[in-house]
Amino acid sequence: MQKRRLLLAGLLAVTAGLAGCDKLGLGGSGKPAFKGIDLTGADYARDFQLVDQHGQTRTLGDFRGKVLVVFFGFTQCPDVCPTTLAELAQVKKALGPDGERVQGIFISIDPERDTPDLLKAYLASFDPSFVALRGTAEQTQAVAKEFKVYYAKVPGKTEGSYTMDHTAASYLFDAQGRVRVFSRYGSGAQALTDDLKALLADKS
Image (cartoon, rainbow, N blue to C red):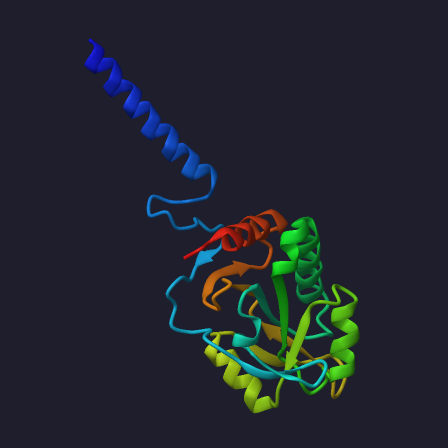
């Protein structure tokens, strides 16, 4: 009887431990269970080399030590881009001191209109710490291909005007510079917060 009680107590302890892992968002492997699509181990989105809004050439390695949220868009986007940036600014602020370890990066798919000055003013309206990157048309195509991002120019209603179609999602990188999560537009602030917290806590 005593042995049976000890066995039952041991099973309860193991079950409690597993429940604790679930609360931390960890799967059976001890790895984070993301709300977005897990890209851990992906062989793309490995780097970029573009100029920021202050004229400095930046690469992925420049941000080592921070959790990154990389989003492709354009300043004249009517809804998806401003919503995404506003949500990220909100989440970053809600994380408190940990928010300082989160870096938002906006890569322009419309370098023809997105000048450095325009990008500087645009990003500052959401969060002055956000970094905007742009390149030539060829560089933009190359980095979009590396990240498997779709974009295309769509003619507007008036002659010479246009808008842009593009992939509406963010890529999340861990502090070691590895792409980890594909976060779809519309997933919500809580899902983004949970995934960022998991990456901030990840020591792998």
